[in-house]
Length: 458
Image 1 (cartoon, rainbow, N blue to C red):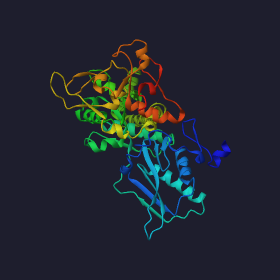
Image 2: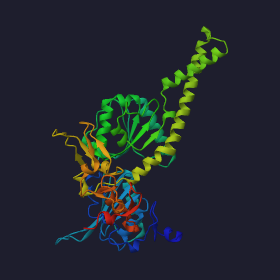
Image 3: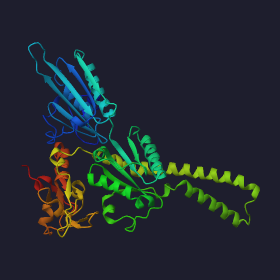
C-alpha cells in the first residue's frame, strides 16, 4: 500500500478509512454534487489554464491529489469541491466550443477562498503537467484582487483590549506549535464598529471572551447576538478571570447558545491584578518579618515589583498558550474541519421568525441551524427581545424536523421524544454515503437510527 501511495496510485483521505484510486473514481462521490458549487462565484482567488486537451485520467489525478490534503471533498466527472479548515475551493474543466476559425481547447479553472487552498490546487496542477510531458499549456490566468479577504477562521470578540490581546497571543502561539501558522485570527475589540451583516459570513469560529466588562457591554453582547442569529459561525465561550457565569450576569438563553466553552480563568489576570497581588505578597512578608519598607529602599522595591510582575505575566502567557493548545485549539480545529457551505436548499431558510405572543409581533429571528442542534423535542427557546418562550419543535415545524422512530416505538410522547433536523441529516448523509454509514444517534434515546427511516429518499 505504501508503494502505491508513493506513486499516487492510491491516496488515503485525511481522517477517514477510505482510499481513493485515480483510475477508478465513481461518477460522483456523494449526493451533494448538485449544489456543491453554489459558492463558486464568491471565491476571490481564481486561476485557469488552457490546454489542447486533458489526457485521460488527468483531472481525476488532480482531484485525488488535492482530496488527500483536504478535510473533505466532493466530485463528479467534471467538477470537484474541497474543504480545508473552514475554507472552500472548487475545480472544474470544460471544452471550449470551436468556431470556424478556432480549435477546440480544454480549460481548467479553480477558485478558492484562501491563498493556501488555492496554492494546494496549483501545486497539484503543476504536478500533473510534469507527469504528462506532452501536455502543453496554451494559456494561464490568475486573479487575486487587492481587496480580497480570506475568511476569518477565528474571530476573537472582547470588551477589553487586555482580554483580546491575551487570547489572541495564546491562540497564535498554540496554533504555531500545532502546525497551523497560517491560521487567520482577527480581533473585534471594544472600539470596533459592529460587524456588517454581509461580513458575518466571513467568520468560521467566534471566540467570545467572557469577562465582567463583556457582560456589562451592550455593544459586545449585541455583536455576539448578531453572529448567533446569522448562524454562519460556531461560537465558543472563553471564560476569563473575574467572570461569574450565573443568570445574574449572563441570562440562560445566551448560556444555551454559547456552548461549548473553554476556561482560561487561572491564566488571564490583567497586569494591574498581577501587580496588586505582588505588592500584597511583599507587604505580607515584611509584616510577618516585623519589617517595614524603608524610604531609601522603595526604588529597589519598585524594581522588584516590576520584575516579579513581568515574570508572572510571562508564565501566565505560556500557561495560557498551553491551555489553549490542549483544550481550546482542538475544539476550534474540529469546528473548522466540520464547516461546510450550506446547501442551496437550506440557504433560503436559515432563520425562523419569533412572531411574539398574544398577537404581539416580534421581528427577532432564531438561527435554524442552532435550533436543529438542540437536544430533544421538549426543549424551549426564549426570545431575547420579547422574552416569549417557544417550543423548539413548534418553531421548526415539519417537514424540516422529524420525530425519532426509535423513541416512537418505545412509546415516548411527541414532546419528550428526540427529533432530527433536516440540515444536520443531509450533511451527515452526504459525508457518510461513500462509507455506507447512514445512521445517527438519537440524543434522547441514544439509539443509532437509520437516516433513511427519518428522511426517506424522495
